[in-house]
Length: 285
Image 1: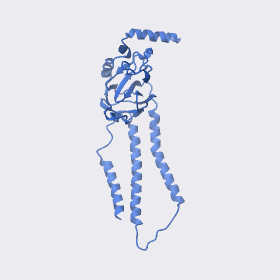
Image 2: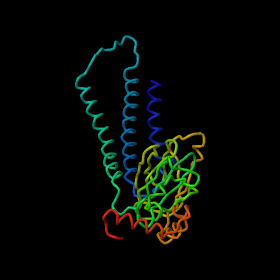
Image 3: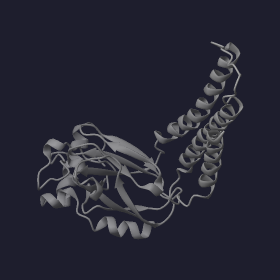
Image 4: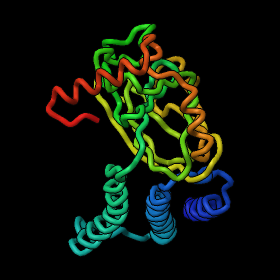
């Protein structure tokens, strides 16, 4: 009997703690409120199942406790009960999976007109790259990474010469503009995660991954690596500053381009891009 009371008290205590707990989601600062909704649906379903099963156990312990002279009945199977439990379990699992599939469908579809930024992870720091005036990121490969070329950009690709390089771990983004974050790793598995943005994605060595979000609230947010990436994992932090467009543009323009890091003049890159386009049979830009 005491065990049944303890089980029931555990359910009551868990429900009260969940409702009154001070530990909850960080304030949302992006468009991904649907991710919060999906998590809450999962919490409610799993919490309800936990409460029902624990209360049933408490009832069974109390109802069928040992009594002198009482003899237990043996029922090897109950087809009706098995069908009911299988059906209820299937409905519960579908209710948890369906919202996630809907959100995932949105998660992988980058809106038209979204800006692009690349996040480059390495033990144990973040660097960033923006496309230049052409709106296209130049080709890059980790095999080209050197002290003089930390992003591994192809110096023979004219479309990468105007790419803006940001080191130091501080990323600025304009509020209200969808942004596609292209992810690369130079060494091991990392994960780009800003809790207030909800969305995150792994950086996998040897491949390029991506995700997108729209920063909606101005402010300063911390970038975390959400994958164990070595002894300095806890130190791999950065900063995202969400600001208005008028403040973002001057910040972006103060960072060097790849051409400037190579000591090239901007007019050289314009001429090379023009020659390449004309060579491909296109009209002069």
